[in-house]
Length: 85
Figure (spheres, rainbow, N blue to C red):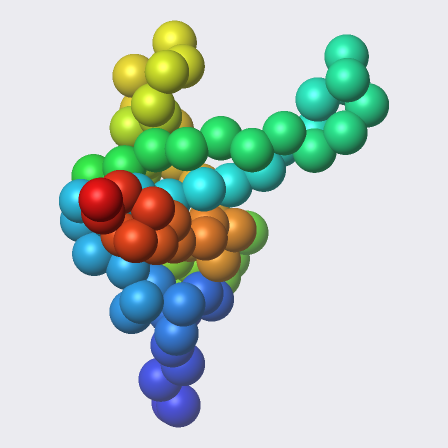
């Protein structure tokens, strides 16, 4: 049997626990995509629909959710240069 990488495994190697990330969700009220921001607290592979998939657990910033799970492939890194003076 040929061992396959999990879906999103290549992208997940670009992230580490503690990285700040951005993702978008559809906002029906505004009828546009809204950006959300958070910090990765865990990256793991999980079985979803009979396929191994890279999932990141993220602590959102300024949102009521304590933690959410997102497909790692849907995340974008936030540049550290945004926070440098």
